[in-house]
Image (cartoon, rainbow, N blue to C red; front, side, top):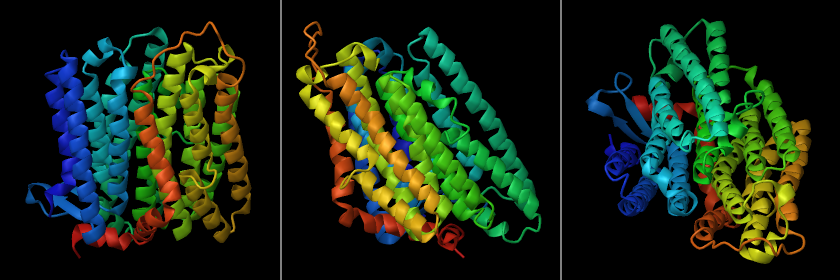
Length: 490
């Protein structure tokens, strides 16, 4: 038993509480937020090192032995996502004073961010299905506070839609957990995985699996459940949008991967169904991105095909494809944060988010333009960037699984994703110099984005170093007995 497993949840939780007392003093709030996030990164890096050196860290709270008590599990898969969450949060907290107004910062902005980090980390680390629901609610309550901050009419409309759809899916989630408990008599995920193999009511379990996929698919913004997401993610300030785009949908797809590699492994119909959903998510997501001239909305729509790519690896379900899903998941969390922040900086510099009203920004902001150019290549998966490695593994795994049609769809989608982001560069940065455009300072804005971009490039260029860890995760996910034994100590 190790208390290290819960530190990535406790530190941001305590930070959020402490920062609530200093919400009116921005100087102290900003300093403490940076201090706490760096402290948390150091702790998470250490925990990640321990996990990959010694194996999963299990915390049985209150000394109640699993499956009777609440269990936190820092395994290969969960800890790598917690680490990524904290690294991208560093960039968001360092850029926040530049992109968020002082008034909004004083309305407990940093408290909400740390509660969001705590909830996301808890969702990744919990070993209990009911507590997964609890941490979903923690991160959602923090996101409610962040999304309504501002009070514009359009923001209120999208906030209501966002809150209602999440409340609805949460009710279905907790009801389904209750049904699952009635069937197997436990909510501990390792214990559920053990007992579903013994239950004769396979039809009931299949129904529960479908409903849980519906719940998590809604939160992950998969086709056809993504309709609520794009506009809800663009109405807050850019830092909030970046955190939402990087984290909230990823908790949904993480939950799908976790339960369908651990609990509902034998539900056979899911593989072909997942491939269809993945393909449609890619197609409709990129169509949405191509159809808009709003910079922020374009980036938001590009979240949807990325979730489709991640689901593809689970659908194919071999080691190469699963490694591709994990690789692409980490890559996408980082690059989506960078792109949402870039969209915010571009909107700030141009004074509008409408591409039809931009042009010639490269003359005023050359560094910003070329950072966007490189980010587009990273997102689309152009060699040797991180997106390429993830997609290469996914496509290779799909070939191994003889899924040729989805390979063609994935390749075409990748080209369209590149074009959609390059639209921002072509229409926003290319063209004649606009003499009427007021030159604004970008001091302190490009550093955090460059940090994310460098990290993303490292994952691609340094694939020889990174891939063995990702392959370890894929091998681990393919053998649910490893998780079961580490938690139940059988």
